[in-house]
Image 1 (tube, rainbow, N blue to C red):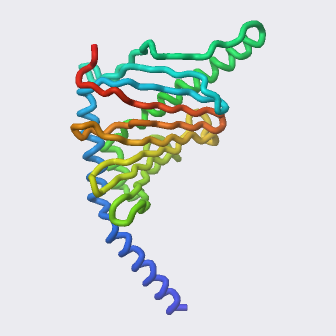
Image 2: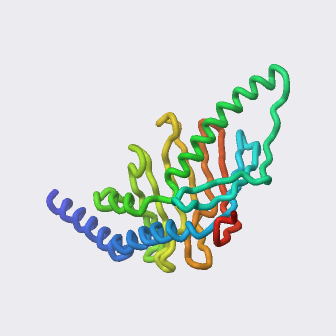
Image 3: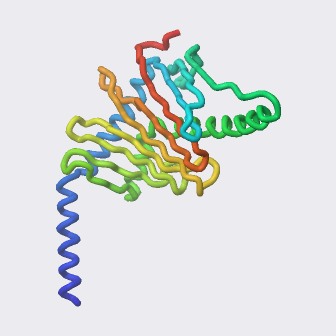
Length: 231
């Protein structure tokens, strides 16, 4: 029994050494935090177009566009453009029932968009605090090059924020969130793809949120970046 325990311990230590050799957690955290902090500041120089498409039961229901920029007080401002399109509800009793359902769904969608804004961009200091607590998980995507770090309870108890990073080019690749909106048993998942502007500023180029319990999918795309507010 003692020999078996010794062998198991040796296997565990060997595995730990391999993982340690493949990823430097401090360096990886430094890349994540540096990109989050710098990009948050640099984004204030830009205006851009946000396009949001809403699917319900796999049917495209609306497409909306906003011009986005940060005001002088640092607040993110969104102004609806003329590029929005939304389906009209039918008339009569059927229309009233549809309108009520539409109102409930519109409220939920607004909460879903607020939830995305709560997580994006992630707060560099907050991810550092979770790292310091020793709760961060690590997944090796490409040995020695690409890793995914998971930060539990980032915003609320039971959620998980995961950030994928490419250590080769020192850039963020993607982000994913597993959380909920109203009911903890109704999970909401959204996946974010990162891209970079010519000056190195990283931004969430596409966000896909899925609320399976509501048969809802939101796709938010950021494009048309320009220096200045565009006003």
